[in-house]
Length: 170
Image (tube, rainbow, N blue to C red; front, top):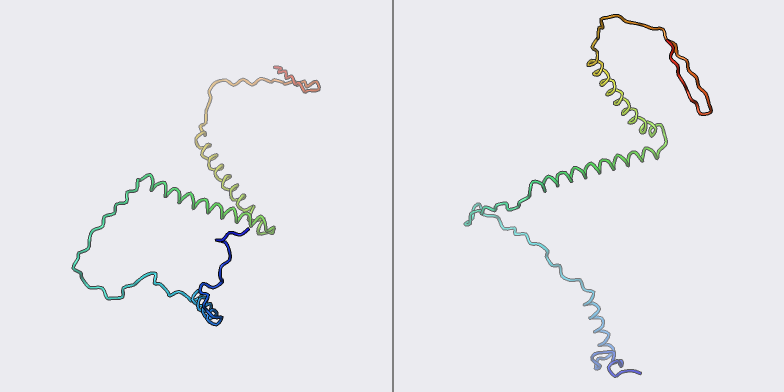
């Protein structure tokens, strides 16, 4: 069932065109559809020379941007953290590249930082030990009698779960 408003109409809007005129009109419509558009300028540059001085003096344009100190500090800290993360990521990438290439270079790449860290820890420990001995090198000279007794120690260990008993004999 077809409705009268949906019935197919004539193919041409002007039924009085001949075949040659219809072909020419179709060619004109297609050429017009595919014709490039004229270029529209997106900017304009005034090439006229600038005067040495003008009739209007320059106007002071004060800076009205107000940035709190905490916001500027946060921005700087964010940039620093971002740079640190990028550096850490690059270092991690380089480490992974070193792990991936199993060669003498990659073994040295892995072990040299560990050896360097161990050397630094050893040097710091030696320095702290030498500082400690400087502060605790007080010689105590005791005066008075010293009694040295001959003592013996007897140890007895028994049982499935070792029980040890020490006896001190003087």
